[in-house]
Length: 243
Image 1 (spheres, rainbow, N blue to C red):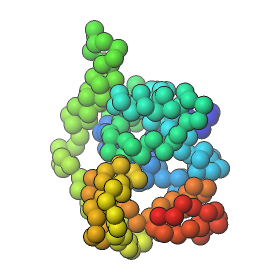
Image 2: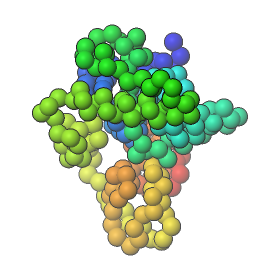
Image 3: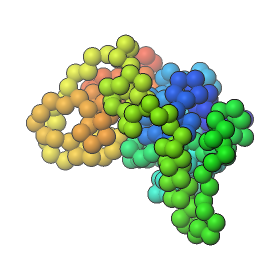
Image 4: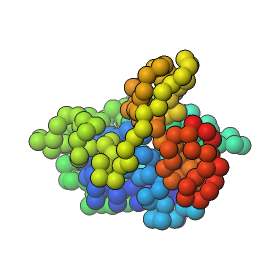
């Protein structure tokens, strides 16, 4: 079992135990690496020594190349091309922070037969017969999203708010440190997660485009959370880029 397969199997276990609704519902890429399976909390279970190893495994997982996830066609193309290059760039996954992915039902049923309810298993989305290969990913992704809506519990809200305690997007208020807003001094600065342009001259904590916390960064060596402007990691001492 290699790093990518180990990451996928641990992802299935984690979702099944903490957010079972995501077994059949799409979720954002940013939620996957920041909330559902962050390196700093799962590195031991993932068996990955460094944050670089984690990001490379995440890059391949999100490329959809192994059929573990149903991904958007453009993300499959961009991440797949990066993996084929001599110098793959895992930071590309941040460009798709707001994109949505879902667990591929066929693979999920093979890895964990009991993960899907009978109705979801019986109606697992597949590309319609005769769909051109170029459109197969789009058809599968839309089918997964449609199937998720059909199998979602009736009492569940249509969309989860960021402040909802059961939302996978919402950081835990019990363990989250108080955020210190930052001020964008000059025009043209962009969010490191979604590349959206940030408002100038006002204190902000979260990106207005993707909702990611702009006041923290992560150590490139161990993945520890660092405050904006820190030059060294407080956990391993690694130098980091200034915020």
